[in-house]
Image (tube, rainbow, N blue to C red; front, top):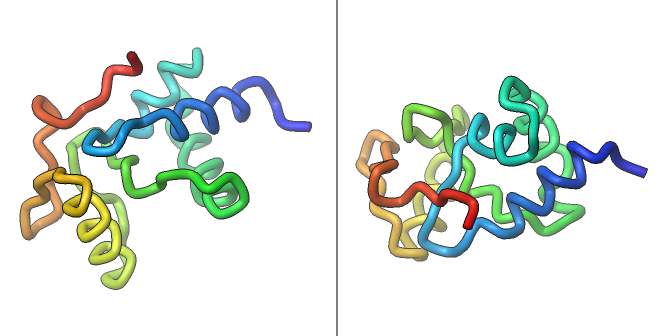
Length: 103
């Protein structure tokens, strides 16, 4: 039903472990399409509920929480902090410390 890329993105996001994050671009690279970060955004936003995806573990390439809505920003920050991911008040995550490499 889904494209192979979409299926791979869903599986990659499902496999990001607690206490780790991955970027949209990193997920697209792991799925075999390094320039498809925007597709990852669309997949995540449209399929998170349906596939019970840990959406809070996906951030932008600068290590920032990408949520523009204050309520969603706060929710993502709280969910990550419950998983022991340190998030600055501005919404930054240390990628050197928390980035999941796919293994």
